[in-house]
Length: 209
Length: 249
Image (cartoon, rainbow over the protein chains, first blue to last red):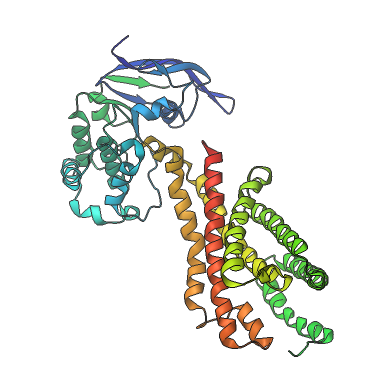
């Protein structure tokens, strides 16, 4: 039990009188990667929202480091970084400012970050350095996804929650992102994805029918 | 100053037939609202005219202050109502914003511009505060509407900021900043073109009333500073209180 990082225990979710999923359980140890699969509208993103503490299951419990996220909704925020599916925020700030923005928050002030570090990560993700001075709003969907993943990585959280992280990418970029995510063996990932290679690389799969 | 007869007022009102025709042609659906708005304006101005004549005659500091207080209460109600937010929840934060605005501007006018308590005389305090409060209305409505509607539309963004490590206040900060940008841009544009493209009402009124144009300009300059400062204060105080009240969406 001690090395279990995430424990999802018999969670169920009803939405508008319909049962999205019932008695779902899984456990993840540090460094494990999990992919959640299933048809659209089956509640995959809802599971990530629950881990974030934004939604509560109609039954069951979710523990991170033994602390119950259902009763303490800010636990998710403490340990996880999150890449939502929709990153189409109408921000006309520069990409560099968008990346640095989270480090202006009190909770991240002690985290050291510099332009060189960002540029190195850009290379690994197949992003051109010139993009840093572009407006965020002008980026393509795939570029926004990679910038989002980069921000999660720079935040150095123990758990990454990724909602369809490669849905807007071409094959070679998908491979780059997967390699990037697999580099860190200590990083625990809960993802919603249908990408075949990513699902193969994950140590666990949860399929919602 | 040349007086205008009531017959002239009525005759000139006939010019309203032009907007009525245009709005009807474009089927904007605003004819009823237009009729209602102008009727309200006529009634309110007539009432205020009678009231003010009476208040100006008595000229008691207590009554003048009570009148300003009444304006604050009405403005708080209008801003909250027009911003489409809950009256019971947000009336007090909005009114608190206007009160801070009125207090700061009132003190500046009373102690730095007018001497020997002349500011508290009805002919100064009521029009000056009326302009400060009245001109705050539009900016405050735009800012508060923009803030709450973007929070509603971009809930995901708010959540995203929380997951990036922001506290609730830090996550809401960007929404406040955007709302202020939207609200103050038109005001700053009109300040920049004042005197060049348009002559403001107060200055025009003073000149028509026979004042020296230079004196009118000084009054206008001070009143614009008061209006802008007051609007920023009202919006900042309101959004700050609303932010602390919100905690979580």
